[in-house]
Amino acid sequence: MVKNKNTKDVTEERLEAVEVALTRTEKILEKYQKSILIGIGAVILIVLAYFSFQKYYLDPIQDEAAEQMWMAEKYFGADNMEMALNGDGNYLGFLAIIDEYGMSKSANLANYYAGVCYLRLGKYKEAIDYLGDFKSDDQVLAPMALGAIGDAYMELGETAKAANYYLDAANKQENAFTAPLFIQKAAWAFELKEDYSKALQLQNRLKKDFPDSAEGREAEKYIALLEAKIK
Image: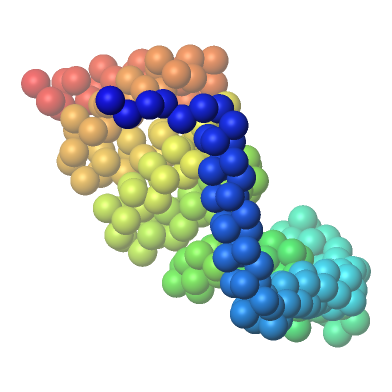
């Protein structure tokens, strides 16, 4: 019968195993020390390069772009779309801001403004291009951009694409401002496609989820009309 090892023997064996493992680790570190140091140095350089790029390039061009863009925004607010897009000779318009400050936050926002300008000018394909380049998770601007693309497709007679963009806009941020607006637009688009069941589903969603909105209060009459069409 094999006798159990005493605690002292077990402890010594474990210590020996640890020593062996440490020795192996030391040998590996010695062997690859140069590569490890190079790797650590590369990571440090990347981090430093990123922060330097942010501080000495991105931050200054963002400040410049913002200084230029306030006048374009003023023209936009005054409904002067041509000046907003192309500038006035003293201040840049949205198009030049996009070209000259492409990596800045202002240039990204200028894509949204430019898209809406083109939409109001009736240049729907250009509107789609610029609005599609706008990237944001903002609770209002993100769904508004998608909804504006839907408006452009609707004007081009591409109702199916418009309906899908309206749905994307409604689902992007389910807030009480943009969601009911685009649910209603999606419902109208599906009704134009004669997909009355989908339109009815969306009007019921309006009534249930946003009863206090203007669109939610209008939903009841559209529900009655759609139910009559389905019968």
